[in-house]
Length: 344
Ligand code: SAH
Image (cartoon, rainbow, N blue to C red; front, side, top):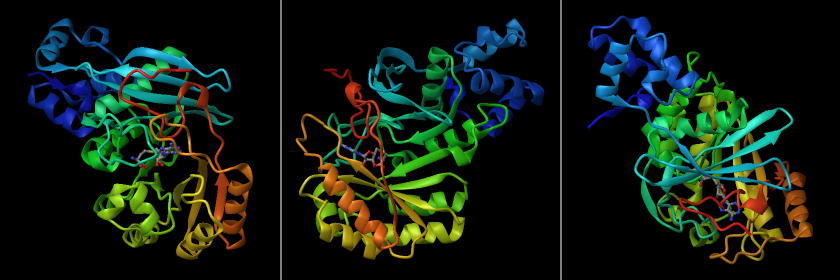
């Protein structure tokens, strides 16, 4: 079985290359080809001898993401890709254009185990983790295809990043590496449904990324109804972990709160949420629930969303209502799937 060379960290690659009896600068060259230039084959590595390229291709393969489908929004500049992986599995990624540059929303797993009742990504179940190189290849394929440079990453696609912890951490270091894409950790956001022990592990990495928690409810009763993970780690534990995270890293934590009509959008919910988050260095993103045909959740009205936001603000909590991008191509939060999507 060949090994995926793109999923090695810089240090691992250095070790393996020197173990082959090669000088260290070779590892740096190879890392650049893989991570800065997104090379698909060893043949592209023209500053490396043919013999060595052959030798490398005997031992390693290079993971990639092949574009199977591309969907371009007619409403905004959002682009969604369905990528085919080496084993015939699929994941989706979304590219969004903002004033400050391009952001990619990457998937971290093929499918998801978490079972949130409003989300499409969990419908077809969980298949496998993505390797670090496969997460990164989503950037390379999109950058190549669109001829752009991506400046920001959100780990908000399919899957639960903290359920694929080691590969995700390796991905973060690799995209941040100056010999690779050199993307600042400050431009990276990781979203989790609240795997508490892994929030502590992440805290101890002390990375200047932004941590986002998918909260979606002000209490255990409502949260457990929509997010099965809450039965394992309840809302108090999640918020305690966030407080510890803020204390240790000095970084603001964000909360995602999807507003679903008559489920979590009442005045009482807003009040209870404000009380719980009182005094925390945090920000709340309010998102009208996006359509997922199988789910049948109904969006809260504009009026209800503004009332919810006002209650938070009046209680001293930072909140914004998030603009929805790419809804005509099912590219919005919670709409990504690990198979072909029927687009209206
Ligand atoms: N598993 C991680 C990463 C996914 S991020 C997490 O749960 O955080 C995707 C975000 O979209 C999460 O905040 C998720 O809860 C939210 N989401 C899922 N379905 C949605 C929907 N139908 N409408 C709006 N947001 C949704």
